[in-house]
Length: 141
Length: 382
Image (cartoon, rainbow over the protein chains, first blue to last red):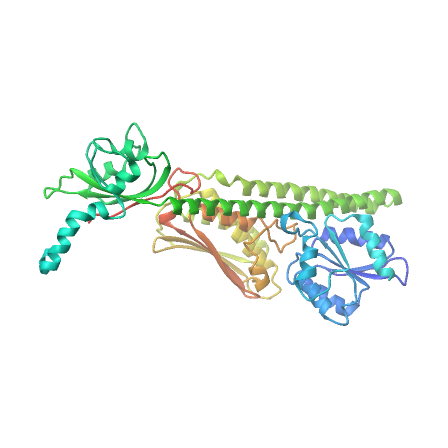
């Protein structure tokens, strides 16, 4: 489940979409292509890591519960790798925290280990405008 | 005892005069008409005045004999019995006790009296109930969290479909509209399947137990999956031990369990990136009074991270187009209702074995609902 979609601009920023749900990938692809970004996708953490190393995307959107290496493992690998660490990661997940807190996973990831908090965090289903605004801000930086 | 000389005689005499009253167990002796003819002080402390009154009145606050009277059975067959019962003490408090019935048999075989020994097991029973309730609440919590997870993924799919349809209309892009519409349809189908599976999970309390050949649901499952396995190029085999006696099972429940495990095993083979002859085997046998079902596959297996989560919550590695993560949770619930356990071994890249063990001693009673009541254990004759 990997491929690359060209957006209109030849100098478009490139976003790696990591999710195991084809419908979610289709949605995010369409949304980001419409906003002028180039996208490519991976359906699991292992493939995503290979692609991140090879393609050096400008931003990653990351699902957490996936087959093979999970999103958590991918995130830690990326943030521990000095070459990949600067790439902003926006987590897009349906994982719910303790007590139904939709941001519970973000807190868990932020204060549990030695990795920095993710640059963005969006519980599914995403707030489309807020998501696009966050992506735009991160890519403009 | 009195063959031991002076010391033996002393012990013998102490036991005869003191044991009955000083042993920390309530004792009573009943005659064939259920009247209590003798009791110790422990008994009197717990249940109050007993002289000339029937046991069901003193111990249970009843006006007539109990429905399944263990004493009556012991009067008839002379066997020692142990049974867990609920009673009412002199202060009106409920008590859970373990009662053991010892027939006082005359040399001619006649049984005029039974000695009943009562042990208070109220604290143990309370802990048991609390543990069961806590497990039930935890399962409910897991279920709700899992439903939320599944619904959120489907919602995201629906929103994606709507986005495609709406922007497609704005752009006059028919291809985009058609694509969005397909996504909408797929996700409506998914939510229907999800609700069905969720109801299967929730329906848990209405099990129907009947005496069935344990191999019957296993054969039905192999028949059900034969074609799907063949289409995927997987050999589906059965190794069912012949002559296993019938057992009280919820046949539909066992069928659901085995179908879930076989379906998972086929998926594990399909998802494997190895090139080999894939085989899924459903085996059954009985060992030392324990019914065993095993589903063995040589598919992708699980790494440590995944194997830790298999039963712990709504967990699926298949994406919600293939699974809701409810299958194994449902399976676990059904196995527990049968008084059994489920376990697995797995090696990444090599395959998995899932094993259901159902001890005959803890299977549900015939015609009963799920296992929740107090079991009876009949002792053996001396």
